[in-house]
Length: 247
Length: 257
Figure 1 (tube, chains in turn brown, orange):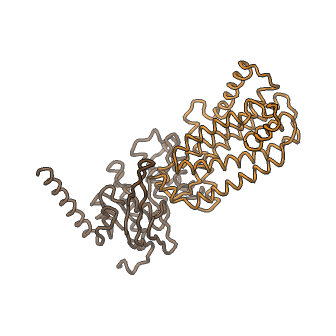
Figure 2 (cartoon, each protein chain N blue to C red):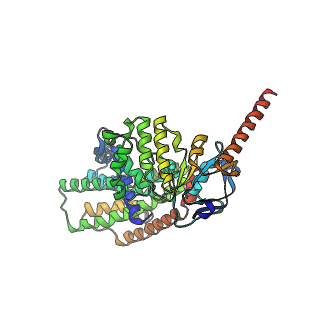
């Protein structure tokens, strides 16, 4: 189905975010994080967002999640869609048990206490924690912590799921588990916006892609095309740098 | 977020924070009572044993001052830093920003309930007769709760905008420690006008005096002052809550940048 025939869930209209940077009382500068971003997100699609570090990808996701407000332009939600960031280990406290942390994180993500409590056993099973679920998180290995974080994060029940580099933590086994979980979500008609550095992940998960460069959309469209544009640019930049170093 | 769910979240946040805190210490939850008691002991040593300021039943007198004061001081200190301390969370989930100061207020309320229960027990143990007049404690505690709420929310907002307020608030609390009549009696100043003035402008001094009046002297608090403070700080609390609601996203940006 072409994207145009699907239900529109989210529209960004000429979005910009800038703020005064404050070095000290006397020195103010204006910092433009995003400028003139317009895009539409349709139900069931997976949109990839690529770009180098600091280009504004994470800020864009925060805007879409309603965590911060744009300083210009508008964000419109349709069909009662809600959005949230998929985050690992929300509000985790090291001295609390896995169970307590899971409860807290689930509620912070918007679950009622009853919903959170009834999902605890599933979380324990998915995270493969066994009896360690009752132990303080400070005793967990990095892998255990990542799995517990993912298990609770997956409870997030919103129409638009925003995923920021979640798949780049933990070991290979964890990354595979996380990617499979995300694939399950995507195949069940979940709308996803996915930020990543990894080409392979974007290629295998995303229908459509945007490339953000210095706060603006530099290229958008079919994933393969945008990735190719981006790669070309990265190569050219590398060559230029090398030439500068040699010359 | 629906109101009931929001209140549940505050409650769970508060309980978990208390649990996490207690698990750090060998004596755990015992510190809830130990800390205020040790403070009273320090004051007792300084003002009764060293300075030899003879005051009838100094221990209960100090407890009536210090216990409620610690409630105020600790809550306002913790709440003031609560939004900036949770910046990691604020950057990842769109929650009402009042959650953080409210959770700190709630956690300290649970602690204080135990401390007040201990205080009542101790006063009875010292041979004071419980009377119906002790019911005055309920509105006094309620007014102090509202006062704490207003200051906690105001402090949290102020620190988001200018971090330096965190220092100023600590200093202000120390100032209140000396000016609220904790180890001295507002009624003993010898200048009735000054006593009146302190009770009027310092709500903590008014409340500490009210606690003593009810528990130690079997009297009643001055109703007009109680109502005045209740109205004033309720209004301030509502104002702060409305402000936090309206500026939730810009506060997040502020805390993040």
